[in-house]
Image 1 (tube, rainbow, N blue to C red):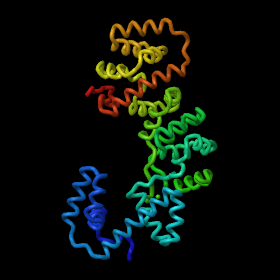
Image 2: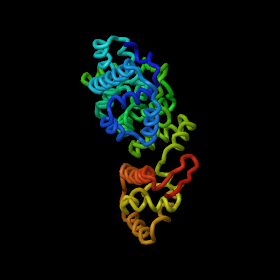
Image 3: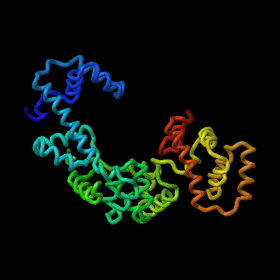
Image 4: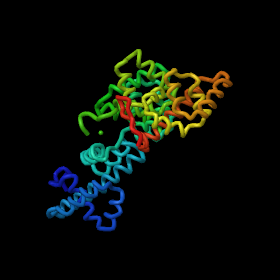
Length: 338
């Protein structure tokens, strides 16, 4: 049988052939996991399929089976483990072809084993690495885990990593594979075009949105001094506590309804006057008086507690935006309350 690329079938037609070969019952089960657009596209492909030879049908089924095997091996031991097993079973050429398709079509992400490690393991793993390598690894992590790792790194390294990640547009696959192999070796138990897209502003924003308020402030303030243009670009793409002044009264009221009185008082302990005024003006008269009383009797408050209270309010804003109750238009400061 020739290589998969020998077939005249497009990727969409291959899926159609696969669904036909699997039969109605299995195809129906697969449809449950597809979007309406995907279902419509595949249904059209199935109904317009021309005659398929037995060889092509067998080739599609073999490709599917071997891809599933490769995916299983990757999840068990990473890219290099899968490559080793497939090399022995199918030969280097076929193994490379399958893994290339996984990277391009199924979007297998590098650093599979590293991503399974907990945050502190990754911190120790990256402790002596240069900022560029740290930025590369963090770009592939879940944003919350990447945030935990970033927060645990020394302050000066945090900013260096953010700058490199923001400016990272593409990375040579060989460098990714080499870094992945080194990381996996260190954990001990723990692809393909000329370049692979990774990092960028979106990755930075997702991570900074997930770090604690203190780390967020430190990174953004440091970036203001080191790269003001980059800092402003990041700020335009994310919501920080002081941005509450940009929200409409309706949106602010919707946010404050979900925050305890005591948290609002602590959050206002150390803020700009305009931020304080905007928040207070969107509270009921009774709530305003209660918070003023709280502030008058409130003794010294740790900055960490103030930052945590502010972060809770920011989290509410982000949650309401994610649920669609408020829509924040990045860059112009406007918002719409749905």
